[in-house]
Length: 500
Image (cartoon, rainbow, N blue to C red; front, side, top):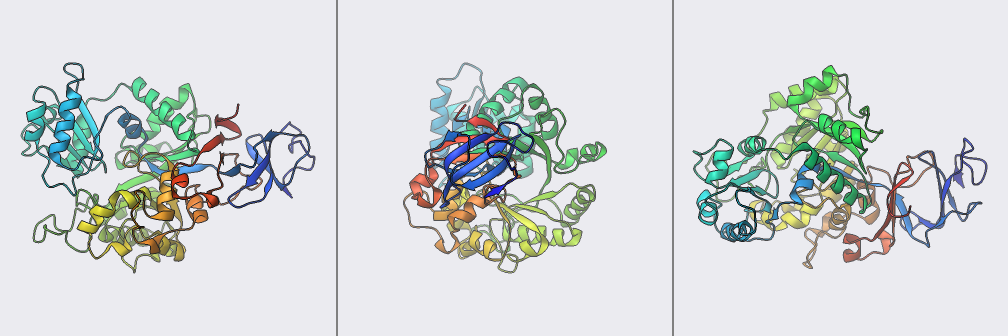
């Protein structure tokens, strides 16, 4: 018996406790009981505890799941936009815009998200959108969030009416997105609250929010009315860094007035772009771009500036989280961590050199990765990283080298559903095709740990953030793992989904 209390049925301070009975204690674990009191797990035992409780009929209890990389407001907003995923050409997307425009109120901006042009036979161009929608703005965001495609009216809306093609990438894209009229705060907050409640139905108890905004201010506003249904670590961007430092905030600090559910997150920095836009910074040129300025991708922050910002943040207790996708970008990011001498995170870590794999563990750098991208990006990787894909999404190699993995979705790039990432990491496919580089599969237990912020088991003293599932993940086939039936989710001892 593992327990904090000495009196069955009572917590250490004498208060009545909630007991979960006939529950499987983790994947492949024995049947037992879990007692929760004052927001914490106070007992985990095989067999029964006195005093009855909630009978879970052999379901499996796991540590609550985290999405270690999401853009929450964008995910929430995209649920109200045209879904452009699955279209195989620029012309097909334009026709989808034509159909959607026909049912929109007059004058309303057409917004869509999810296009992937890395394999298209034709190129996105404003003329294609002007032909189907000449009289109102069209704003289409790529699946990876690193490009935006606009028609002439959309370009005028963001002050770029002179742009030649209407396809803006990286810094141009981010500037255009900031220039768009914002959804009213009360509307966005309602959408975000709905998205967080929906995330809880999939077992999510926390997210690291990398939305490109003043996340501390936004989450403080949202939580003043009602704490979110998940815990949040609110990332900081460089333009807000000095304000955060002036307020004395450090990564991990709980923001006042948020019900204890929102913390200061890491500082988000960029080294490069993305694979789909061919702007991920690589050691080898992209096919067809040899001899051009874009041949190796894009370095978004100079090495010197990267080190300066990381050193400034780390000195104030703010953890750096560095976006790096290409192998050259990951080398630069790891070099910067070595120069600064601080721990932190690399976000994505998609393509790595063999020499860099052990450096994650050596430097204490977490690999914050998004396994759903393995299935989503396998074809574009085969084309643009041909001959190098054996070291793309190299999760098994990172684990073998002792690196800490944390899984996320990068929502809205992939849905905010941790089971999609768990299944992709375990099976390396999602569409019936053979596993892509099966040597990089990870075991179910390791995938669950990476999806739970490093928690691998329930232990007395833990915060009572739990998820209860109908199927033991060790017994689940690929389809069941992806669609895992979640029975209930608990946050700090309170149900956010399921039993009341």
